[in-house]
Image (cartoon, rainbow, N blue to C red; front, side, top):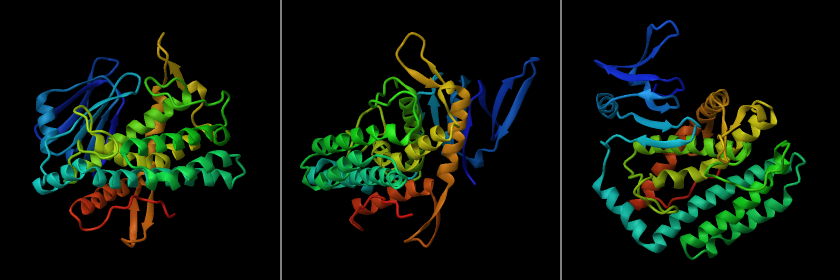
Length: 336
C-alpha cells in the first residue's frame, strides 16, 4: 500500500536501477544506503538538506510520485508535481468554464467556505459542551454561516470567512492552555508557538491535498475560492480549507493540551521575528498528522470505512461530478 515518506536527515536521494535509495554518511565515514521501494511511495516530504538529480526526478515522474520540500525552519518551499498522466480535456474545459462564470464560481466557493465554517462551529460546540467559554466566537461563526447565501461575490465570501476565523481564533485562549494569550493569526513568519503550529499543520494538509488531487483528473491550478496563481496550486488551497479545522486544529488542540508539545519545542528565527518548531517536535507533529489521516470513519453513502485522507480525494471526486453536471457539489460536513 502506498504511503508518505518523511525524510528529516540530510543526504542524497538517488535512483539505482529501479529502486530508490536514501544515502547518508555515518559518523565513521561509511556510506549507508536505505532502499525505499518505489511501489510503496505515494509522496516524499524532504525536511533535511537532500541532494538529488534529474535522473531521480524522472524516476519519480515515471512512478507518479509527488515530492514536497521544506526549508531548515520547516516552512514549505514547493512541490515537484510530475506531469499528469490522468488528464481530461473535457474536464479542463469545464473547470475553466466554472471559473469564468461568476455565478458558477461563487456557487462552488460558497460550498468550500460553508464546509470550513461548519467545522469551525463543530470544534467550538465540542469545547462549549466541555465547559469552555466560547459562546461569543460561536455566535459570530453561526451568523457568518447564515450570511453566506447573501454574499454576492468571492471577495464578500472571503471577508465573511475571515470574520468567522478571527472570532474562532479568539476562542483559542479558552480551548488551549496557554501561558501567553493568543491574539491573532500571523503567517509570514508565524510570530508565536500557536501560529507556528498552525502554519506547519496547514502546509502539511496543503501538500496532502495536492497529492490527492494528483490522482484525479482535476487541474490543481484552477480554483474558485482563492485566485488562481502561476506559482501555486490554488485548488489544493480551496479544498484544504474544509479540512483545516477537522484535522489540523484538532491536532494542535490535542498536542498542546496534553503537553505533547510545549514551549521548549520552539525556537526563534535568529534576529528576525518568527518562531519555528524544532526538529523533534516536527517529527512528533508529522507522526500524529499521519495517524489522523489514516483514521477511518464509516461513510454513510459508501457503506464502508474510509480514511480522512480518502475523504480529501472523495471531495475532489464530488467536485468533478459537479463540474460535469452529474451532481451538485456539497462540501463535507462531518457527521461522526
